[in-house]
Length: 598
Image (spheres, rainbow, N blue to C red):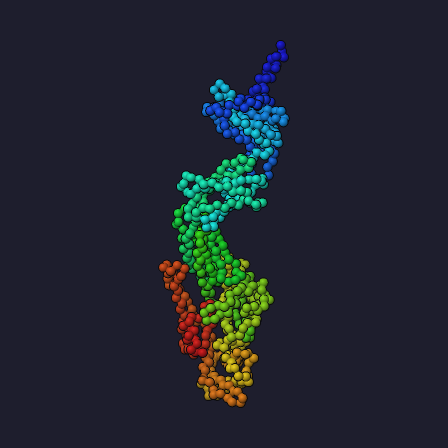
């Protein structure tokens, strides 16, 4: 009599505990062997049963992942029971899930590697109804989590869109992509099989670049599809170039060798292009100098630059591409004040440069061979090229040497009878915040000539004459000269040079005074007549005062500007030789006047 109430109480407690957990793992359920006993055609029967382990990341699958079953409810709300049977282990289990349409089986509730038969049953009306059976091996039944479109890289080439994302470690994956034109209700679908790459999936589809689209991706493994990813917006192509302009904001007298410039451009106005930012590239027009590349959200940019010439380009960015690049040029700036750089002629094959460091580090030196209008060389000679040999007309550099306060640099193996221009750039080590820049600064720009039209040498009083040599051999050349106003001629013999094409003669004349000069030639003891008298002007010792100003930004001519150059005239210009301006090439008009004087 005492035992019966105790058994009843234990059974009641077991039922209460089972109901509180929603799972009765110990109660068996019976699989219907007769197909007629499974009423899958009833409107009350659940349908669409799917069971899978969830792949929540791209990490290797482990055995402790939860196992989920989902289904679609019948006509009326009902109490559902999820059942499975394992034939090989002679076991069936039932899980009470209430009116839910999904249930998670924890690792202790199922057999990972066994072939299991699942179904869902409920009471529909007065009869028991069941879903169709599902045969699965839990270890091999995986459903991927939806792919995050933020982790998908996209790039467009013409009308082809390439998609790329990290591949999970499981093999045998199929990728399905669906897309539609923005505003359309109709999806287009395509299959992208797993790529041969071991690390990434790569899929290419054809989308018309002139229109924006929407796109989703899902993945399937062993006939189980993941959910569709979130909808990605595929913008239309940006076809128009941006309107890019620049202006000089400040010459920065407190930051010698630098200038503050501002770059501005207009946002594109094409529809559905989804601009995400802009990429601005500033490239010095000197080989070996570092370029600047910035990705920006705004449509203007201020920066401190050296006085080197630059090319600037800008493109608009969206998720799948860029606009065509718009490129403009920023001309070389003029050094303000006297240069902290000196270039002198050692001999007719060597130039020597010297400068002060001002708490800077050597960056590179540009030695340019200058003709009347063009620059024939524009290459950076850096410390890495200290012993660079002459190549294609480039000099060998000894590299910067000296103390922290002053440095010298020699360029040897130069061609005589040439005009050179030197610019030195340095990296800033210590500077004020407002002077900071990413391209260093220009400490100066100077010129020197090794030719017959300017007198340069260790003492500045050497005049070199050069003319085309006649084809006859054994010629002697006689030169006579006198100071302007004198009646006394001085004479000297200049033997024929070793050059096959030209005669080269050097005489010493005091550069502070003008002279007159004549030449005659002798062949087989017969002298020619004296040439006409050439006027040799005195040296110009002072630099011209050169200025420039912006006249008009020429909005009708994008990428161009109208500037005006002015300099102070010197008296008796036709009686003097060319001066050596600090940072500008002599204009064609001044060259014409100079050529008359010579």
